[in-house]
Image 1 (tube, rainbow, N blue to C red):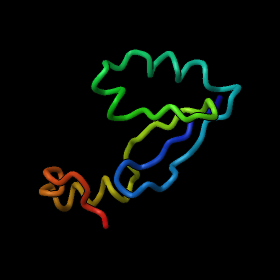
Image 2 (cartoon, rainbow, N blue to C red):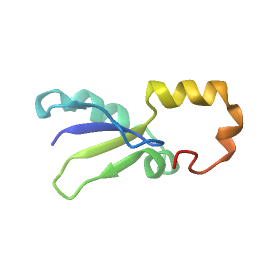
Image 3 (spheres, rainbow, N blue to C red):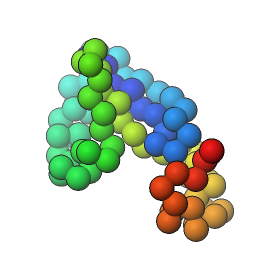
Image 4 (spheres, one colour):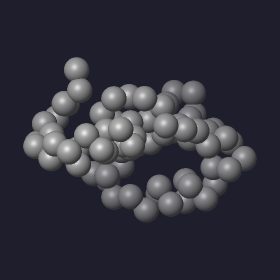
Amino acid sequence: MGIRYTCRHCDNEIGTIPFDSVKETVQYLQKLDESEEERFLVYEKDGNLTVRCICEQCEQSLRNFPDYYSLQKWLQ
């Protein structure tokens, strides 16, 4: 099992954590409540976990254009 981080706005891969480094991260992610887990975690069929977060470029765009927060999907 590995953990993959992708941007929830543009779907770019941010990084991965290999199998041997996963234990601490999984313990932290287990502290999320159900709504956070549904929003940010995707359990893949191959046993990997995808964490939906935000990349630096999208974060900067949200800072520059705060109205984007009200949109479900602002990148086309």
